[in-house]
Length: 112
Length: 114
Image (cartoon, rainbow over all chains, first blue to last red):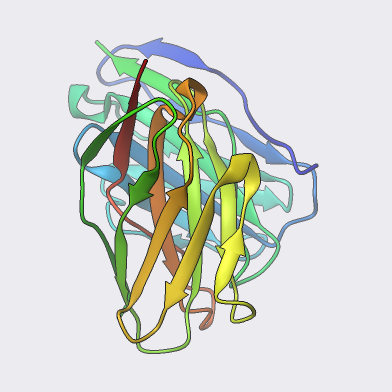
């Protein structure tokens, strides 16, 4: 079975901090994704990567950046955390286009 | 451009009765379609997928969905609801062009009443 592991289930940070969310997949998947999920808004795509060192902006990239130095790891960075970034963050991977995505269990991030 | 509309934000059924969660899609190409389920405080789990083979797709936990091109629909059904089916369900479309990400519907919350 594919396993997508997010480093933290729950995280509390302060405004202005630089925050790192880590995601690792164990199936050599090409594509990786970061979403945030908020009540009433569904899943919104922040960034995705279709190969190592490649990244593409999603629908809401402002205030975020990403890093993919190795194929199995995709990191989401909040450059200067703000309270409106309090949310559930979900990482996903897929082998290639047109295939289903596999999700991690999510990180519930609170910015105080 | 592709899009997904889940017609109900919340559906409530009694245990043992049928479930119908409605989904319409828009796509310029022959799409692939998926249904995912999310239980509280968990990630999304794939229920089933349609990729241009049989139009009636069977998934896990007794769920199935029918692809109807003429109606641009991909509704999810189950003959008999169980309490453990209470969750959020997402309909998802992929055009399979380039590396375009999947497009998610806003979700339907299913409640099951004992």
